[in-house]
Length: 245
Image (cartoon, rainbow, N blue to C red; front, side, top):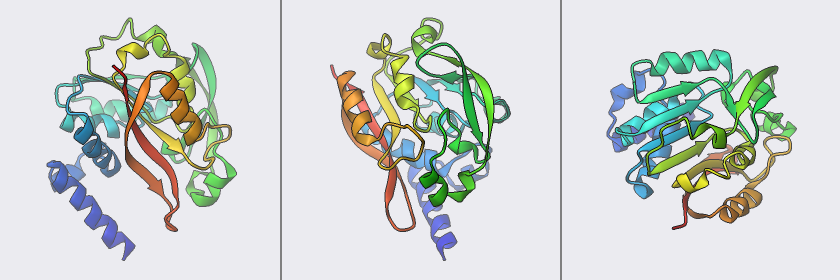
């Protein structure tokens, strides 16, 4: 019965988005990303540049082109095998540019936990609570990946306003923002996931992240998505902010 409800919800999302049910058959298409961007579009009518940090296989980038068809998208994915899928899924979309490295607070290399469930991969370890709630995230391999900071990238990447910085880096969001302090005046919107319980070891939770981005000069717009357990506990929420004028 749960599967039937999930299928019905998926159909509803795609009908509401205007993408059509046949879009579900395309490689890289994501129901979650479509719903997230459908909600974002309500608050952010125009975006010309998207920095897609934690791109995975291109799910967010491909969905973003439906809502912001003229946007130039720069997608960052550090895991080589996942990056290969990102390239394959976006190879026919010239507006999506891909980069095979992580983003953080400095340049160099970092030990990265490549989770067997790639969406859970992070610089940080998956917490015991995370593994308890989502057992399929328990296995990972440690690899070394290059890491860059946004402050050193933006001079070389053409950025046209309005700019959306989307972070899906599993608890490492604050470190990415630390590497972008000189560039934040060029960022118009922030979209990131914050946890209410420790899903990763050492990650800053909602209160810390909310206060931090406010100190950086952003104001909260709305929640645009969430991760919920079967017992209806909200574990994480996707939060949308805009830079104060």
